[in-house]
Amino acid sequence: HLTKRLAAVAAFVPPNARIADIGSDHALLPVHLVATGKIQSAIAGEVIQGPFLRSQAAVTQAGLSEQIQVRLADGLAAIHPADQIDTVVIAGMGGLLICHILAQQPAILKSIEHLILEPNVEEMAVRQWLMQHHFLITGEQILREGGHTYEVIQSRRQNKPVVYSTAQLKFGPFLLQAQAPAFVAKWHHRLVTNRRILANLARAQQPPQQKIHALQVENQQIKEVLHG
Ligand code: SAM
Image (tube, rainbow, N blue to C red; front, side, top):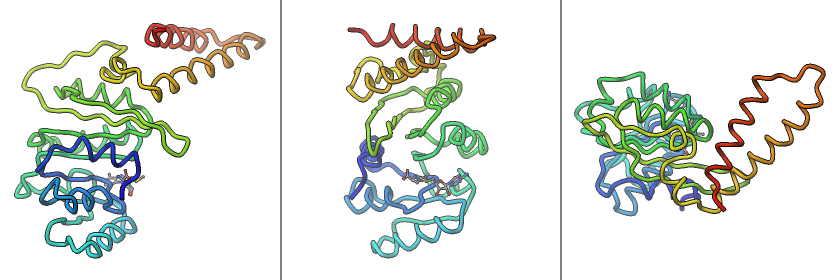
């Protein structure tokens, strides 16, 4: 059984995709996808011994050692050309780490068609990376679980440039359109927090003008996006 967050990631995996789940930890995602028959096989990559052993144990316990290969490797190095992987999943890490992992192995990345990413923070950096590398965002989901807000981004390689506006990169092209309750709550909360910070900064002896300006710009962006 998957958490709400991992279920949202799983929902974006194309049926019969050949996936590599990088940073798999308990291998929950590939075990679920193979056990339910959505995919036939998978690679689970882990860079740290503990999570690697946990993944292996989970795969063995599920009786899926034939279908899921667990590899101890840094990022995309877990993928071998013979695997014919077409979909990479990276979930539950910061956006900057996700971008770093994607940038480390350009030769392997070239053969990847779909990226399904769930950055815990720095979502904008991930969308920027996708745009710069000609990946079109094909779906997004925002959800709340355990007091956190999570965003899941599904994307697909294009053979031409992809262009997004600053607002689309910051808020997410699909999330911006859908205005789901979790989206409105996230940005309303940010607006309120920024206003509180601005009120405090205004009382400072030497108000930091740059910081104040940045917060004002962000609040303006949020107000333009949260219609109604
Ligand atoms: N993907 C799972 C999920 O979403 O529930 C597990 C997320 S867990 C918080 C992040 C995992 O990524 C950790 O187990 C960590 O060891 C692994 N990790 C971090 N950097 C990595 C890298 N460069 N290559 C492979 N795994 C990495």
